[in-house]
Length: 494
Ligand code: PHE
Image 1 (tube, rainbow, N blue to C red):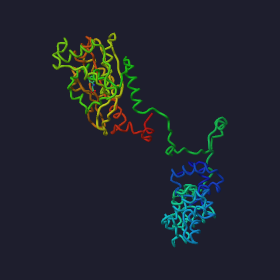
Image 2 (image 1 turned 180 degrees about the horizontal axis):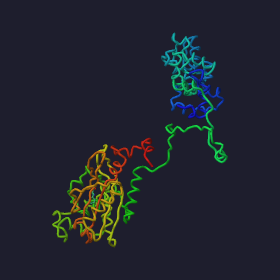
Image 3 (image 1 turned 180 degrees about the vertical axis):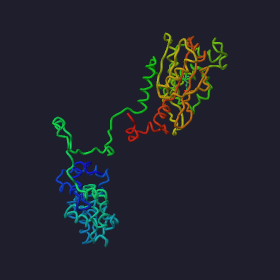
């Protein structure tokens, strides 16, 4: 390490360490005529460069509190009581007339606890142990002479610091970190080569103007030196992903829609042609609500159209599910299990075509929490209604994932009760060399769209958000998003 890489402060500190290991930063500050902050700064640099070693040890400075000082002078309450008992057994009443009343219970408590006296039928009698001075009393005396370091007190007195400190205002304990600095072998070597004049310091505007920098030597920068981390505020990665996705859809000409988290079965399932005995409706998947237990349903016109679709297809050319549709089951309340509930609500409003909307929101499923499942997560949902076809659907999905940075995606046939054809989207994850399923999509069946009076194809998709964010952040545990691990959050790129 060439000397010109040393900062003048470092050189000063190093020189002050010349004779003697184990100097404290305060010693160095005095020897080098520097302030303690400069010394600490220089020591940090020197230690990252491996020129000094800093050893830290912890100690406590023990001193007497207000009560402790009084006890040291007058004796502990139990000692004063013991003195009285020397002349014979005493009743509690007798003790009360001799000691300040608030000290009586304290004295009796400690007399018994330390085995200094016995208490029977309201009478106290002194034991042998009560006649000799205890280590806690010795400790008080030692401290009366002045504060002490824990490490310098005899072992048997050290043991009494804790019990004494449980008594109010008896002891004051200050924690202290002691630093001792010594030169490493490299530090000694650098010092032996001699500390020469350490360059011209900082290049100034004047030096540049006058040209006086020429021929001068300047301190080099150590580009490998550690620096303090710059902690800037930033949004949570999930929030950022949500904002990014929302911008992508907006830039593709979509409008954002929102829907309630507490939904009716009607919008979450029935309007989507999910039969009322479908397993996904079962308690193990869906969180049903007790209060409010019943949801307001839309127009009778919409309800009877949906009922007909379930029962017999209702003129959509379908046979329906062929069972008797139950309105009260449809008005049960739940936490929405997918954002498709929000989509279908929007569709029922029959806005003018073409419709291009998306929503990003929370959904709930009764899943056991694990590294890949949470009972609460987000979906990215959207529909396009107009003169569109299946190819457009694939194109939109491809475009979206490409903008998110995933070029390699594929579609697989799938099944949803509300779409036909239905597909699953998978993206290729290079690092794992595997395909990962990210969501579902399809074209709404006539039982869904025609029932709501929509005659055009409805392209629809519902994609997972967390998994996408995990892939991009290289996360293997979904719970990380909710753990508030400040180090991880700080370490994320802006
Ligand atoms: N709702 C489906 C799910 O939660 C996804 C989906 C949305 C599928 C729209 C098709 C159409 O998995």
